[in-house]
Length: 498
Image 1 (spheres, rainbow, N blue to C red):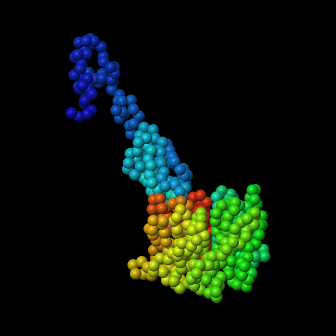
Image 2 (cartoon, one colour):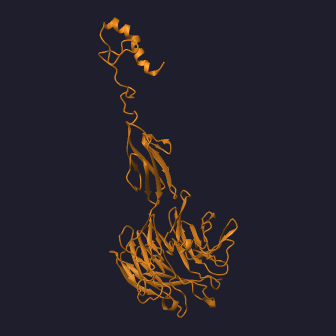
């Protein structure tokens, strides 16, 4: 029976019973008197599509008024008609919950109906695209992105800002090796609109700021080109109000030797009484040119006093031991990226050498140990000169990074087919986030690869600026990544990915 006849026929069948009980009174409105005949006093109302249940869910009655997120910020205004929308999450956010504001209907996320119109999804570093379908068929394409790049304003080009970086807490030590006659180092706090206190390298001559180290109480600045290449290190005390007060100048004990003292720096131990490790990769022990060494200076009553020098036996000429340093508690690692064997790294624990580390199949020029990062027992080692072959096609100086875990597991990171990228020139880490610089990538435009050990995702952030050398230096404050582009001419020399 056609649906349109069912209400009328049902009432017609009940008609005789109603007449017997109630006489000739008309029934409830609306109704008919016989099949297909409307009551003249109570005509039928037009069919509106309502199901008679008193609801408001008929076609066109539902409304979609908004879309919310548990984190991040939308890049535009929501439209109830659909279209496209972007959502940018903080770099360290791995999961997001979306909630649609709807009355009288439901919203689908990638075709799924979500309870209470609330839906949660994982977001890898490469981002996530979601199609959100409104209650009336509206289609919204949502692009979710982790981390956004932005330039740091107020820094001039040409001063080599960002050739080196060091971070502690929410502060970044930002050298400008070409500022003025002797260079400059400024402190920049995360969230500040401009650099804070700065120190000049007057009298230190070349390369002041080539290396920096920072902790809660001290700033160390290396000038390995000073004094004809002997090198010097300037020490400053960080005052309570943020000012920097010059403390002392450190020099190598061997005069007349191109030691490159201050080429690498690292603080170890308590913030209030640390040990300062100073790399001098140009040292010539026993006539072995550029075999290298590391000096230790211990803080005592506001001064740093020379404690000892590390020059392990068996160093070969040209190994450049001390060209890189990394510390984690009582543990330290020291890079010797030169030599005919392609480089190696020495592990030290509590001042005692624990042995050398060198993976197989290295070749001269690979520079294994040029960049280091040590945290939680996990060691990252960059080899920016390593060739990388894919499908039999060599990619010279593509670069690689090794991750050595305490369990003995080893992982290797690289960029496919990126000839002369020098991937692994810089390394920074914050928890599960690992950032690796490739400053020579794409004709020295440079770029940064970020991988997340938590979910295994990764993303490459290439620079679009000519010869910027983006990724020459990296540092994390929290989960904000600072990226140095020291030779940029058409963009800021420092940017953030947050």
